[in-house]
Amino acid sequence: QVQLVESGGGLVQTGGSLRLSCAASGRTSSNYAMAWFRQAPGKEQDFVAGISRYSDITQYTDSVKGRFTISKGNASNTVYLQMNSLKTKGTAIYYCAERTSGPIDTVNTVPSDYNNWGQGTQVTVSS
Image 1 (cartoon, rainbow, N blue to C red):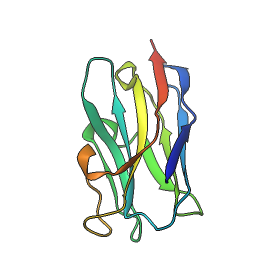
Image 2: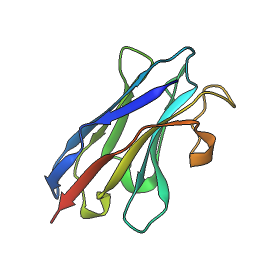
Image 3: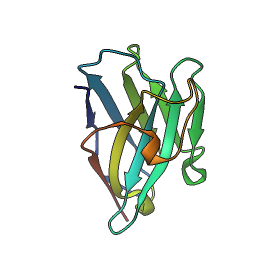
């Protein structure tokens, strides 16, 4: 059973930075892509950023372009999200997800395309 564990969330002021980490354990096969989603109170879960396994193709939602950076660790089952210039709209629970089926080496933005999820880490941006 694959487990994704996120860390790095917390409370930060507007304009500050946080770095989220996600590590997968119990893996028996490689994933095709990993991504970060977020869910604000009363809102749907939204795609934030994703990275493909083989070509490191990255994709971001428009609202975070130029401020957030997704990257992989040395191990293919680790992914990071560097978040700079945080805004209060960034307050949400951030979830790490991985896709182990479907097209190889693409980044999907739909939550249902991802089959393994972490428990989430809270990010709160205060004004």
